[in-house]
Length: 209
Image 1 (cartoon, rainbow, N blue to C red):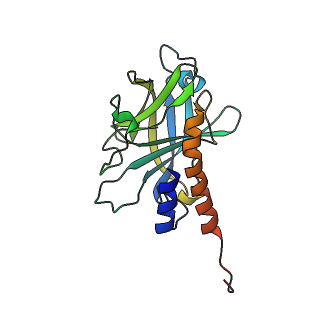
Image 2: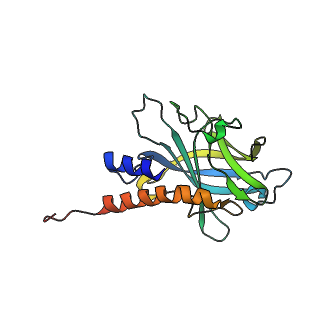
Image 3: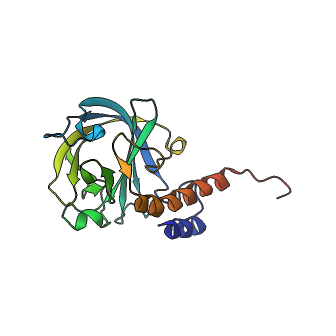
C-alpha cells in the first residue's frame, strides 16, 4: 500500500497522491443503533451527527474511465476529538467485500472499509451503498456475517474546502472501533507517505532553489 502511494506521488506530485481530487461537503449521519446491540459504542449509539464527507476517485483517472471510488466521513467524538471512516469500491459478498474494484460512478457499486475493525463483538466491517437521491445507507457486518443496517447518510451538498482536510482512520478513531495491529502496520506507512507528500508540496521554493 505504501509502495503504491510512493509510486503515485513520484509520477504525479500532489498533496494527495491517492484520491488527489474530490468533493468535500457537510452532511448529516442518522445513526439508528444496531439491534440487537453488539456492545460497540459507535455501532450501538442512536445519534444524529453533523459530519464532513469527501467523495473522490482513488487514481484520478479521467471521468469517462472507471476508477476506484472513495468515500470518507469525519465525525466528532463525545470527547471532542474526531474520528474518520474511509470506504472504497468493493462488493458486498463474503469475499468481494475485501476486494477493490472499479466503477464509473461514485455509487455504481457498494463501498466498504475493506479491512476489519477490532471490536468487542469481533472483526467488524462497515459498508455504504446508495439508497436514494442524496442518501447513502451505512451497514455493518461481524466477520463474514450478514449486513445489518446501521445508519443513513444524508448529503446536503454544502461545500467545504477540499484541500483543508485529510482523513486518517489509523490516527482518528471512533469509540469501540479499534485497529488491529496488522491493519495499523499495513496502513500507517501509506498515510505517512501521503503526509510527507503534502509537506513537500507545501514547501515554497526560494529564488536560489
